[in-house]
Image 1 (cartoon, rainbow, N blue to C red):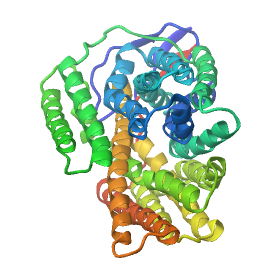
Image 2: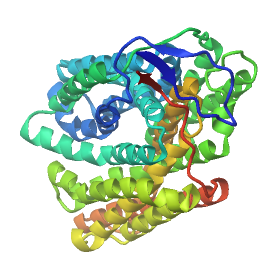
Image 3: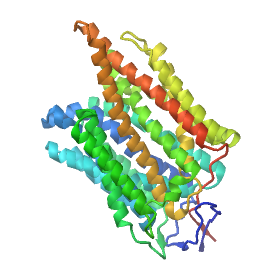
Image 4: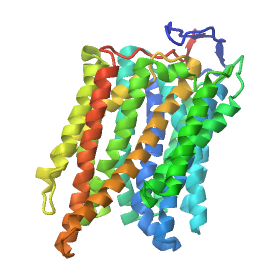
Length: 505
């Protein structure tokens, strides 16, 4: 048995690269649909962890006795570690092997989850959440880059990315359902312990299915670039968390965001001047990939309006329990899965990326527009369900197309860091969306109460006014995403990336 590589010509990123050899007999192409199942499970674990813990937070707060002011750190610790280390995690998977990085990420995430589940203090829980973020930053880019280099045949690639995009988009809603179920019928600790089950299954599958890869040449890690971009992303994510809690005019908010922007400029300057850049600028300057990253950023910012504020609406105004709230999101999940798979496999080859992503954003905007009409006494079937289904259909198509575009025509050696950019844009978009929309919601509620006497009804109306204000803004965000997609994307199917190793007899 010999090893060969698939080397489709990349007009943008092609360069003389050292051959990579496989040291194992288990090529990932041999059972690639099982590989997709393993990667999808790991992606689901990382994505749902953001919302599954949110649902369990009130119970955790009662159990460990920490204050409302401290509660945000359980969420922020994960976001800071995850968001700031993603590009480093992606590059490490390129340098030291995707399989190795993936397995380390899974194992570390599982250990951190176990520590969080067994937490006896607030500090222990926050440390565990930071640990989840660190290992999630290894795991998420490795998973997407493994998918990128495993599926290179256009029809299979479309189907695989449709499924993966659906998981990435629907994971937040699934987390709401799972978090509600575990909190209601088990304990808040199981919102952490459940990751051990996901990780164990994924680790067994990865060990059996993924081939070990050894590179003859291993470039050095770009230390200045790593330090500057890690500090930049930390500053940006933390700055937006400060904006949410302290306000946009607060000195700490302005300072952290300014520092983040300056450090990003330093990072970009360095990437043009080092031999082995952490993020080769050709990756983001490519038109298809650049537009796809922007689309992922927009979806990340706008989707928080659904998961965050619609959750508040259903629980605070309609009186839904956490588990019923999760069930209420299931039609959106079903629509997203259906749309992701169908659009990637059937519509994308026929219409191209520009039409599909633009249409997806516009349908998502229409779904948000429906949700702007909710009232204190609105009916789920008439006023919420249509908006959720439209959101699922539109954003499923947009996400699946964007995931393909973001990793299109990328060299095998850059697949990890290109994949990390997907997660980075999603994370930063989510941070901005949360901060911006939370501020808008608070301002809208205060404006509504101006000149009104506080009562149970007017307070409920003020809350609904704050939610609908965020839905209007999210409608605008998705409309901007449609314009960006229409202007920047080409009417073509994103080219596959360079192939992974295959085993030849």
